[in-house]
Image (cartoon, rainbow, N blue to C red; front, side):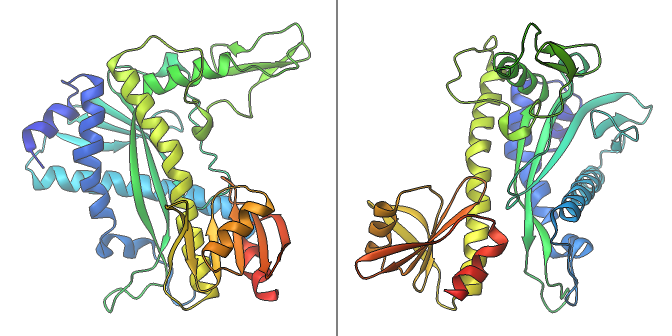
Length: 358
């Protein structure tokens, strides 16, 4: 990593779009590689058949805890990089107050430089529900960025560190916070609920405010949900700048990739539980659309029975699992001349058991 470039980025001497691209292409790939080393992941491992809760409430607590731990580890590794490069006049610090942002780069005298809000999403979570709801008035357009870490449990322990599972980072996304908030607010303000009544949807000095049948209340539902901030092709747009266009492109890519990443992990994990054969692709119209092992296949697409039967027959499958973007599954059993629906809208945790019973 180039010392001079890093100093310029941390001191925010470049334009926001250049900073975002450098963090995206140069800095965080290096941090992610360091995080994924076994010497780092050993701190988060599950050992000797330790288990995390499977019920939804406690599972959410685990994900929240992992988000905090990943945030701390990113700062630790970043300070490690600074020392390796001989940079001693700045450091990564934690924001102790529970407010935006999570991390700040400071000079030794306390002066703030770059500021980062860290969001962590587990790949296989059915509802990737992290929120970015900081009002635009509280965001510095010159210094503030949102970092989204995509993670999941993964094996990989060796003779030195014999964990069963440890969290692995799969991708880190970088967004200019002010531009992301512009996209969020443009979309949200132009998509009010149908039952506004005589009221309006907007903001007060503290938070977003919505209205139902003329009664105002703090918005607690969809405002700032990280996966619903913007929709490609939306007719209303903020004023376009190089930074906003960069943020939009990164966000659209993020929306598509996080769903595919979760599907791949779920499909391969469940296929390995169902079958000891090598995992291959499900192919349809010369495109790889899913994964298969033995006679079982997984695809991420909702479809009617005739298409499911066609895909299964072409790939010599007797079971086809069709998943939605929230990983709810329809399970088809294919027999000569017929196709049966074993389950519909099933949660991922039940799929293997249903297939084994069939």
